[in-house]
Amino acid sequence: MKNPTNLFKAGLKAGQRQLGIWNTIGGNTVPELLGGSGFDWVLVDCEHATIETVEVLPALQAIGQNPDTSAVVRIAANDPTLFKRVLDMGAQTIMVPYLQTADEAAAAVHAMRYGPNGMRGMAGMTRATRYGQVEDYFNTAEEELCLVVQIETLEGLRNLDAIAQTDGVDAVFIGPADLSASMGLRGQLTHPDVDKAITDAITQLVDMDVPAGVMALDPAVADRHLVSGASFVAVAVDLVLLADAIADIRKRFS
Image (tube, rainbow, N blue to C red; front, side, top):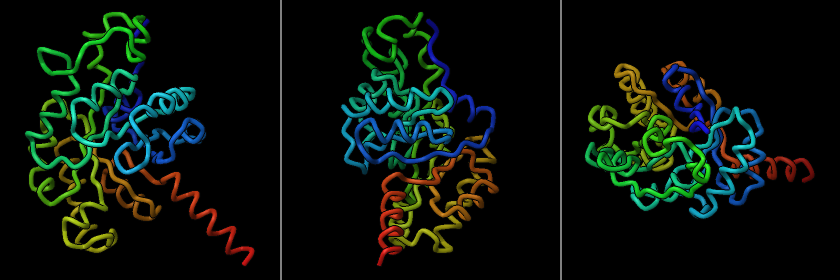
C-alpha cells in the first residue's frame, strides 16, 4: 500500500485556492458533516476548542470518508509529544500556533521528522502506517507531511522571513485575533492597522513563494485576502455558524 497523497499539500504546491472550515465541536458527527460539505479542508482545533488529542482520531476517520477533503489538525502548542500523537493517528497536515521565531519553527520541523533529522518517535502499528501496510512508511512519510506555522504576534511578523524560509515549513497562517491583541487592538480585526499588517504579511509571503493562509469569517474580507494572494483561507467556524443560525431563528419568532 502506498502512503496516501496529501491533497492539501499538493494544492499548496500547485498554487491552488483552498477554502477551509474550522471544526471546534468535538466528536465525530460534526467533522463528518463538515468533511462532506464541499470545503477543501477542515481544521480540527485542539488549541482553543474543547477537543482533546484523543478525539482527533475519530475526527480524522470521519473527515477521511470524503476523499476530496483534507484534514488539518491544529495542536495546542509547539510540543513534540503532541506532534507525535496526532502524526501517529494519521494526521498529515499540522498547524502549530503562536510561533514567533525561526528557532521555534525549526523545533516544529524537528518534531515532524524521524531521526536523524528529527525526533519523531517510531511506531509501526499506527493508523499513519495503515497498521503496518504502507510500504516503506518511515522513509516516505515526510513527502506527504505538511507543516503550517501560525504567526499571530508583532514579534512573529518581525521574524516572518526567517520563519517562512525555515527548511521544512510548508506554509504560514496569519492569526488575526491574537495579532490584534499583540498590536494593542484586542478584537478589532477590521482595524486599518490590523488589516494592513495582515495584507502586508500575505504580500511578503507571496513574494517569497511561500503559501499564505488566514482566517476571515467576513466573506468580503476573505475575498480581499484571496485577491492579495492568500492560497488557503478559513471562511467559517462550526460553532459560529450554529450560534448565528440559532440567533436568526430565535429572532424570527420574537
